[in-house]
Image 1 (cartoon, helix red, strand yellow):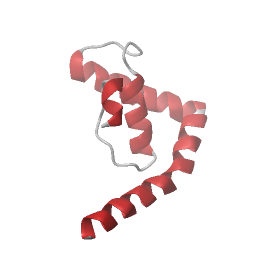
Image 2: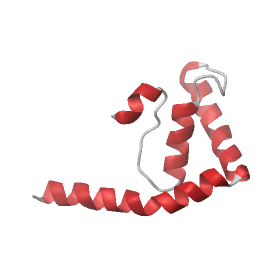
Image 3: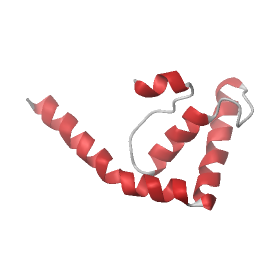
Length: 81
């Protein structure tokens, strides 16, 4: 039962981060900053040059900046996990 409560609490806290996520992604300066962070992470990860294959890591960075605890995700297919 404690695990279910913990998972629900995590979902609730993530839900509360959505307005911050929208605000960050809607601000061109903050979005560009997130893209720069994502570009560095992508280059360090596998040598890809942003924006090639950069959508998943950019989303990961935006989620992280909004306070949602997600790992760095580099492949879009892995976003659902």
